[in-house]
Image (cartoon, rainbow, N blue to C red; front, side, top):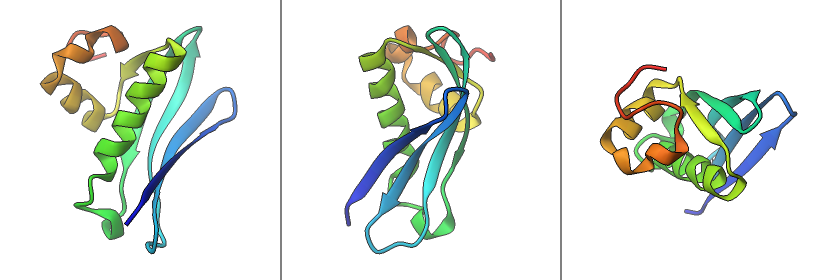
Length: 103
């Protein structure tokens, strides 16, 4: 199975969308532009049909890579993103808070 991740962005809000060949569902991390060079990761959602396939982690990896490449920082509002960041303090340069700190 191949997972494909795309980005949708209307200039104010957006989402990273994951699709898996053969599964009629999609996972997402939604975000909001909060100012120059800052977005908030608002929500991660993965439907039951995609559970256990590493979709949420793949979406987060894509978000982090996008932040590195496009030089923006992330406000970790989403509980999943916040929890993963707490486990990976080496991501600190990509976030607006310290690991484990509430935004």
